[in-house]
Length: 145
Image 1 (cartoon, rainbow, N blue to C red):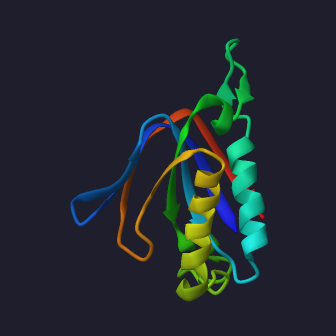
Image 2: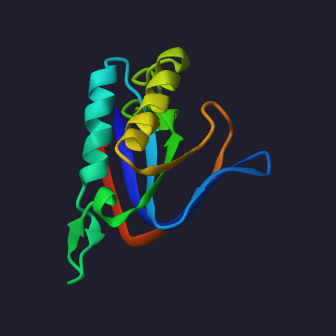
């Protein structure tokens, strides 16, 4: 699994002019599933995201997690994170899991975050989505698991 984590002031996902998911302050997660990912690896990485200390404490230091700060999460599937450009200029997505494997694991990622007590919004798997965000910081991290 590969996740791009962006700390945001706000973010939303639109499909065909309808907002399908939106959050205020929190984390936008762009999530891709690889063919070797399992329910256990997804749960572990989602738990790590919830505990990342990337929100400011009272002294302004990045020392609080999404859990501690009450941040919301927006989960957006993005298989293109596994795009391989080592050969040529057209990306190969052979490193991404097929949709029938990826969809339930993306849903599990969101469910794990909810089970930890976070407010979670989602994009729509397989849809052409438009993602709008205000990156806060900017803070952007890449997690591989």
